Image (cartoon, rainbow, N blue to C red; front, side):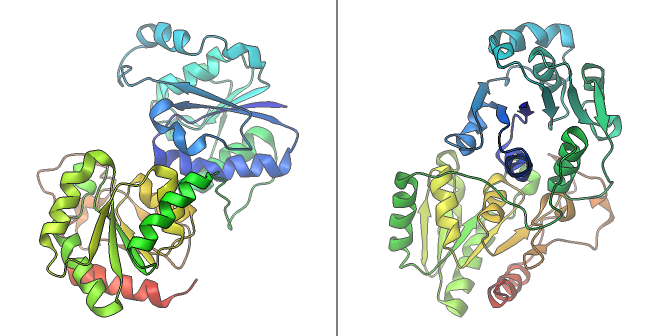
Length: 345
């Protein structure tokens, strides 16, 4: 069987789809699996032994709200030759017009996606041949697995999720160098996030690093992307102890690094989901998005969130003039870190 996964991005979205990839690998070991992904999000999938063909696209110019007629020529140009794989089934895990178009252009007669109410762009339904209903208010990992189960009629796990990620000796060496600089006994703090509304104040991360050093003797590695160095410097400036390191590891080196960290603290962002995939002890700080949907499925991990405000219901705002959901004090997060360190699971 030739199967096409269509999950374009972001990093967190791809991580949440990896258990579905693992499930196909177990149930259909002889299947030929291809994955269509945005080039900017493809690194986490490269060299994956379960993926036979990685199809990279760049659809940043194809903004939401454009019609099929407007985006079809560019999508068609980017996926020229995709039909050569002769797919038996294409599964659209993204739920967008552009992802459904890629499934359509793949030539697969069986194109399966979420039911209309679960699609991010409901108009994409017309490009699918079958919809799969999924349970409401379940973690996105389970939602993806339910879609896979409905599409391929194979068993899927309900827990103990696998996240197949292949790293190189270079990734391991890069992570090892950072860990050595932190004396092998460290926490990882990530102050970044794709939306402004997902950010806990950078200065509070600096104060948190001080508390973690004072009470637990852990150096904090402030891990960010190269374009987030200014945010990291705000964390550094707010720290009195100076017991932190600013580092910008590559994506897979970050994955290897967080596997050896004592604890990880971050918001709803790609590195947090990678930390979950790596089996790290995670403390998530969530505001406009829901932990039950996007957070860690591990019962030992902890979410710090404000439940005393009504405006968080169905929020998902990228900007906000009443931005109070991330107004959480340092002591509350520090207490969560202590509880997560105590729980060895």
